[in-house]
Each structure stands twice: as structure tokens, then as C-alpha cells.
Picture (tube, rainbow, N blue to C red):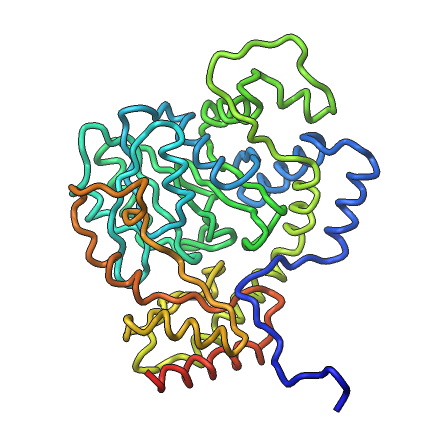
Length: 382
């Protein structure tokens, strides 16, 4: 045996950025040109995304900023309410509270873990101005029902599609239709720009407001930035933020978008393999996705012996396997908790049982096998 060698298996990461030499060369090109802020790469990435979605796109610094700016552009603010699922990352709630509105936690569907609009209807008030469905793990649930619900109650729909880049709904690409759709391009999403996000909508008035707001409210500054120029004489008529995307981010995103068919096919193949290996297990419930149309950002299971979830997670880590929990419900967080909240029984139940297994394009089939073998072994012990 070689001195210093161990039998410890390599750690299987829950998620990771998956980059090629093309992304690295694109970043070096930006660095060599020494124009790192918002410029021609951002404009090109927006055009490429617009071609992808066949709709206008504006890029921003991250997915949370995309949600916040979309809400603000719709005129939502202090005294208003936005209904959204409690089972989401805190970013969705923070985007609402950042503009002074109140996020109203709703329950989720017990099969798909996406917003239950029937439950949301019970929580409407005269102050409700928008609904924010969150496309959990890449699935979108009953999106037609959401839009019918929104039309009935005169609400804007702002889709948090951070998990669903590339997913199809009824044969149409998520983002290619609907009111306002927001995506995230952080380091582990279906495509990444390191950080970043975008807003997709046909509402050009909304996009114009977002374009100004991402640059501190400086009106019509985007056109100057694309040319490597600045506005030295300008007006500001609304609250703005420093939320623009940089050329470095966009350079990565441009190359990732070129690789999307490869990256998405890999995610779908791995998720199908998980389904095959876990199918029929008495203690494991999977989300019923069609991975020919869904591009999964994460792969989530429900452990039916929910009180053992944390023990299982610890045992998997001992076996060198990272897992996650998506998510701790937001209505449990101190900042968003209040005593009078209506019960969320499904969220409260499944949040104690869900476990996210490793998924990223660099994962190998033998890694998936090892994860499933360890999971089944440890489930037998509890």
C-alpha cells in the first residue's frame, strides 16, 4: 500500500458548478479587454436568451434581484401582499419584503411541492396584488390553474423559475409564455453565469422600468453601458438599485447557454436513473416528474419515516455523500413568523421528510448507484 493512501471514498458533492475551458477563456477575454462592468457581453447574453425564450429579456445581478425588480416594476410596495409557497428558499420571501410588501405563506401540493393555488385563495385579502408560484425542482405543477386564478382575482403573476430553466410545460419552454418569469444563474443552477439572473416578459413597460432600476434608477443608461459609455447627465424618477449584471458574468452565461443541451440531457439522465433505482422502495417517495420535459435543478425524495430524516442525512455524510434540505419553511423563520398564520399542514409535514440527493452534470452513474446503496442501507437500520 502506498504510504498515506486511505480507503476513504471520494466525497460525492450535492451540487457544483460545471465549467468547460470555453467559459474560462471567455472570462479571460473580458479580463484582457479590461471592461468588467455591464457592457457588450451583457447585451449579447440578453440577445441569446431572448432567442432562447423568443421573448424580451433583461439580465440582473441574481435571481433574487430579478424577483424584487419585477415586483417593484409592477407597482407593488408598502401595504401590499404577495402570496407564495412557504416551501421555497428565503430569497423568494426576501424579494417581497425588500420592496416593503408582505409575503403571505401558502401551502403546497403534496405530490409536486409547488404552490397550491386553492390554498392561496383562502389567504387573499383586498391587499393581495400578486401571486408568485415557485417551480420546485424544475416542475411547475398546475400553471394553467395559477393563471386562471390570477385572472379571476386580477393579480400579477411573477414566476420564480430559478429551478426550471429549460423545463417544458405543455410543450412550451418555461419563460416563453406567461406574465413575468424570473430565473437565477447562480453557480449551481441549470446554467450558470457565476451569479446572475434574468426577467422574461412581453410587458415592455415593465422591462423598461427594470432596466432603469437595475442601474440605480438612471434613466436610459442601459444603451450607454452596452457601448462602454456612461450617462453623465441624467434624471432619476424612481428608486433604483445596483443590480446590473457584469460582463464577466455574462461571458460565462453565453458559453453555458451554448452547452445547455448537453448539461440538461445529463441532468435528466441522472434523475431518470435515480427514479429507476429508488422505484418501489417502501420508505421513499419521489416527485412524479417526466424527465423528458422537466430539467431538474435538484433531486428531492421524501423519507416516509420522516422523524429519521436527519439521522439518515448524517449517516450519508459519514459515507461521504453530501445531501441537502430544500427547504426549511419560511413561516418558521423569525422574520416571517406570526402567530395568526393559517395552518400549512402539507408544508409542515413534508418539510420534515424531504431530502435532496446529489445532482449535477459531473455526477457519474456509479455515483448515483453509491448514493442509492448507502441510502437503502441506512434506511434498513432505522
